[in-house]
Length: 144
Image 1 (tube, rainbow, N blue to C red):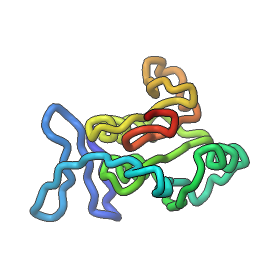
Image 2 (image 1 turned 60 degrees about the vertical axis):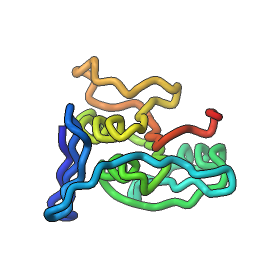
Image 3 (image 1 turned 45 degrees about the vertical axis):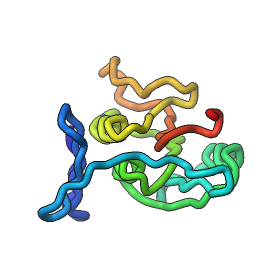
Image 4 (image 1 turned 120 degrees about the vertical axis):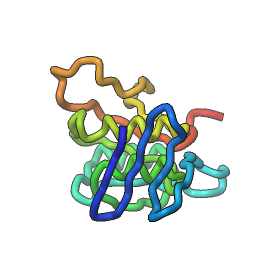
């Protein structure tokens, strides 16, 4: 699997080989970082174009956070790089918007899960829309 964004010169890939990011002639292994400690605000990725009351409520439950607005499925790849902690998606997305990027996140050690804590699944291709989901870099606030 690979995620490629020509406008950013970014390629993310996940397969049986180590996950790397092509950066001109250098390769860097990606690892999620997660929230470093309890005194540091969560670095949250969000959509610039899809604000919602559901997201506002979810963020209140999360606690102290810094919002980093960003477009496209690259938000998942930013989690895989360890540059953000969490990306709640409480608006519609299609399976093809998340599949490759989910593989990148999971290969880097993160998780993509439904609001019920289940892994985001592609087992029913007739379902073209994902449920609401959260991408976690390392842990969620309910874990120790």
